[in-house]
Amino acid sequence: AAWRSLDAWVRNGVPAPRAVPMELKAGLKTFVPDRAFVLDAHGNAKGGVRSVAVDVPTARWVGAKSGGFRCMFYGYPFKFGAEELKKLYPTHAAYVQKVRARADQLVKERWLTSTDRDEILREAERAGIP
Image 1: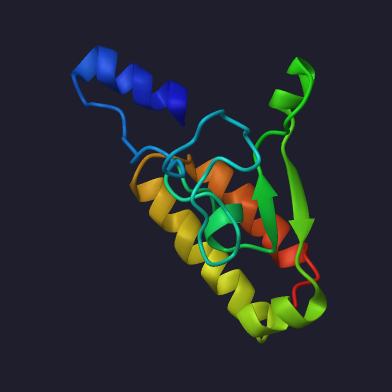
Image 2 (image 1 turned 135 degrees about the vertical axis):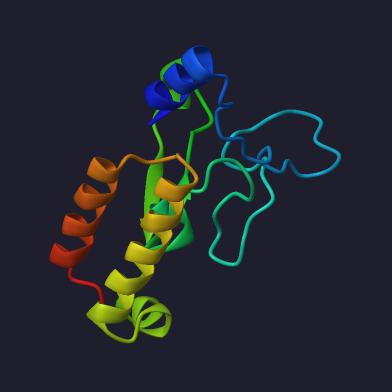
């Protein structure tokens, strides 16, 4: 989707989509990636390009680790337990519907291609959630 947006911008003057910046906590003295951001109700960083995994969460996602340089490039999840998942998504169909709605919105906003959307939906349909 990023390449398609860049191509449309260069060829046709259609600006690429924009997202609000990720929200950093106030008063930071040093930047520690896994502790620097304002979090939403599910423990995920606010702002930035919000993916389906972040807006229809099954985990708290941390995009980078503190420590050695190599660690900065690896994110990791803290998966929600069965009870939390059941609260968020009472049925599997409810989960898939939320994934579909968010993926459709991301296609409309040009953050995803329809092929990306279809792959995300296949994964959601196979997921054991709740």
